[in-house]
Length: 572
Image (cartoon, rainbow, N blue to C red):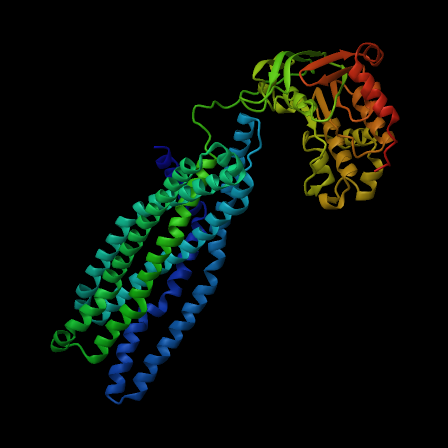
């Protein structure tokens, strides 16, 4: 049922891509029709030229050959002009698929707390496969339709009775192929899944060969792996049989009409057909119907299956369960943060990173979080921001569950600041698009980014992220958070690429700003500037002032001594 729903959703995406650009679709059809113009006149011109040459009428014969040349020129023009409308149809499809993938990746990351590791592959590989194969199939299908129509019209004008020899085998051949398409898609998907299972099994075996040998599990492991290989081989044989079926369909639709015309040639001549008419009918089959049928059968049997399976995987990967309600975002103006008996672990079987943590950060407070590297400080920042949800306990912001609070009520700046291509104003106003010029001036001055704004050329200057240093990107992100209306700001080592003076200026600016401030500290100076300090040590935590923790917390004394004795870092 799920596979069917994904397939239906994939078809809807493709249909929507066609409906989204009706004008370009019409233009694409017009140019494709011109591209098929040579097929329409090919057989008729060959028949006329042949009969004229046999009658020693050189003038009419040359005229028919000139018609062929003119049709070829028109076909070349249609072929070159068809790519513009095709690109206009296909490119929005890629954009739609990218949105689907990003939506699914965000949903999966929020649901599991882990990044969607397959999203990059879907964005860079699978989406491109869908776009390229969809474009190729549009060319193939349009070409086939207009070639088929042109050849049939040509046969009708040449000698109508020839349609009775050509049309039925073509219909039967297409019917045979259509009957194989659905089974081929299913088998292609099974083959891909079987190959993925073999690859996963091989990776596991490669890492556990010594343990397998030590436990004497060689035969059992070989049998399990053999079953996977046998299943893959059976699916591959089934695919081979379906490929043979496509060959039969091609023979019926593309080769049988040729034999029927040759066999019926004496009868056709007796009923008024000239040698040119017979040769023209053969030309329509050989140069029109047979190549077009071969192209569409091979195209749909190859690229079509690839498109269907890849699109199915993309739809499956970005599947958001229908029973997941849309998040309710509640506005609030308070930065009051409370964690009640919060426990969090990255996975059901993993050790808790944070366990039974109780913490209250009142509105207007300034808290620094310290601890050894990898102890859970960034995890705490994600819990406070509502990005992660605890396995046990609750996290509230302004009395509202943090996950339900409107995103605008908190600003989280990670260590690697995000800056996008655009103007400096667009980057600084990303969290508050209606920010005025004076508000931007105050934020830039408070955080200490005046020289950066001046060097870049002002707020309306174009910003290329690649030209900024890591510290400059952090300054842009700090101003962005400062100018926002968020009552809670979390700096997760967001000043680590600044020198000590610039860091102090930025942190004091946020401390004097209305609302609460949480700083994941990487320097002792950041911790000493805070009103209170939270020390994390695995599942243990201490909370107090700098003086209290020096007296009561051995870990804090060790961290303080380590920081005090460490050489001052060079200004970055």
